[in-house]
Length: 253
Image (tube, rainbow, N blue to C red; front, side, top):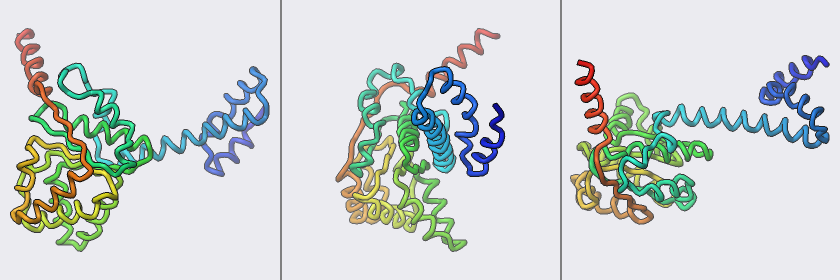
């Protein structure tokens, strides 16, 4: 049976998921004696999955997430002190529905950024637009918009993103204009959208990001109101990898 005409029409209607699996589904339907409704449902499922996957890939491309930093690649066994159960629970993204923030704190190299990006991947899979940035780089990018007239557009874009991930928060100083942008971002996202923040500084140090202490206190108050704090402890992944590489090099000499 030649289904070329049907396949061409499906492609013309941009139903490529159905077009690609039509032959396979016809064979299965005849072999397993599917009803018409089951056959049609399977084709629709193929099309829906193709479109969902395409949307996911588009969200992932815009997110700036590392494609390799996922829940599947996170080594929970390396640091037993890392709260794996909490991270897995957060990966269900219920915190986003509640408009809660997540703070992942701990020393350098313990997997904070990987965990944050893994949660970002899960959000993308569930249909949420996500944006990952090193905090200082984000506000440099927004600040640069003041020179070409795109400042307001960039800031609005970040504010409206359903999940924002700020890596290495409070690690580098922001100028006064960038501090105002940060405060506006925090204020306008408050109780509307979720933010994940990683930092190797304690909460007590966070207001120090702002030279204006009142502004710093107000920003922190909004951030922590609906916040979930997670502490990462243990050895450094990067240091462990360095030691492994050095050991291999010594053996090869």
